[in-house]
Image (tube, rainbow, N blue to C red; front, side):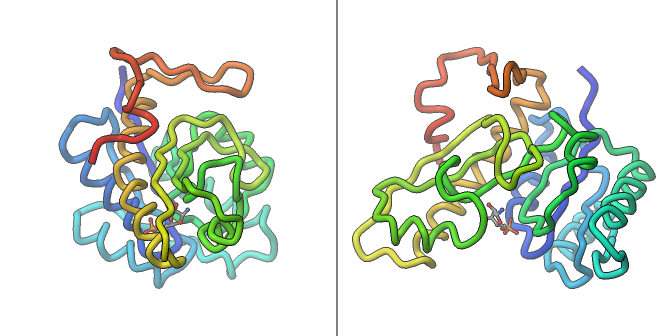
Length: 216
Ligand code: GRF
C-alpha cells in the first residue's frame, strides 16, 4: 500500500502532532508528514515541526472574509504540498461542508472525550459537572457537524476523586498521545473501512484491550 502523504493541522501547542511525528519516524506507520499547517502564526507546534525538519505553512484565517475563502486557501496549500490525508490535531476552526465533503474519509480528528458525549469545547469541565466516572478520547473520521463522524478508536481513563479540569485533561492527554498514532497506523495500513457510517477494523488480533485502552 502507498504511504499516506499527510498534513497535520494545528492551532496551538501541538502535543498530539508531536506524538504523530514520533510515530511516523519509527517507520511503523505507512505515512509521511508532508506539511504541518496552522491557521495561527503563533502556534507553538510550528516551531517544533520546523525543528524536526518538517515543512510548515500558515494560512491565517483572519486574511479571509469568510470560512469558504479560508477553506479554499487551505485546499490550495494542501494541494501544493501534495497531501492526500489530513490529521486534525487541536485545529480550532470549523470547516465548511464543501471542505469536509472533499476530504470525506480522508480526514481524521482527535477529541478529548468519549464521543458522542461532550462534543465541542470545555469537555473536561462538562465531564466533571456531569459526574461521569470514565472520561477519555476519540479518534474519528470528520463529518461536517462538529466532532461527529465514524469512530475509529477510543481510550478510556478513570475520573478520580479530587480531579479538576487540569488533572483530568492531563490524564486524557496522555491517552490521546497513545491513541492517535494507533488509530492513524490502522488507517495507513488500510485496516479501516467505513460502512454505513461505522468503521470496520480489520485487526490481526482480537481488539480486546487494544482499542479501548491502548497499553501505555
Ligand atoms: C487535544 O486535547 C485534542 O484532543 C483537542 O485539542 C487538544 C490539542 O492539544 N482537539 P495539542 O495541541 O495536541 O497539544
